[in-house]
Image (cartoon, rainbow, N blue to C red):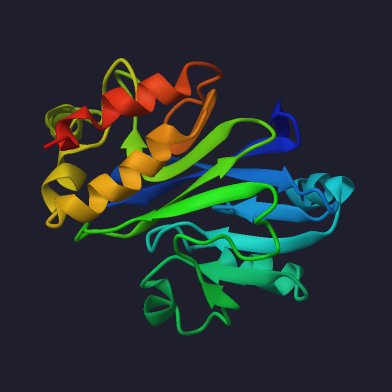
Length: 229
């Protein structure tokens, strides 16, 4: 249910989500902070076995929705962990007024995880503003939707053609073309990406791509090379 990905970080794959007939895998990460509490990134559906596995690691203190597209299961996590603080990516609190968020996240980590995790909001995109995280202890960068890689054959019929043309299918994670076109403020995006590429990243986690265990810094630089002026 939970698989160790590196020092103080675990991942769990959840049920597939279907959007406009496209099947998307889901993935979350659990990070144990220096104070022993847990940071939950992009939570998936909360099953009984998953909750037991999470509880065995420590108390849940922070639950984070890293962009405005990944929010489907926040209500269940809030109900299960009422003392945890929920954090919304820019724009999500207007979309999910039924959720009591503690704060909106941006470029500065809140005190609760500032000692363990860095972050930056990738702004200037019409689809969503995604907050990308860097867990220092495991040298892991966490992307949500900005980097994707689906295996060949994942989609069928006309959806396979759309996915290929969009760049969702390839040899390594990349920014899909729909997200590239949606960057109407590329200058703002470049500022964020420069910070991300500067992180000494070894590992990469993304919601819709296979986990990468080494060479993440160079991979990220390649994935955003098109954004350079």
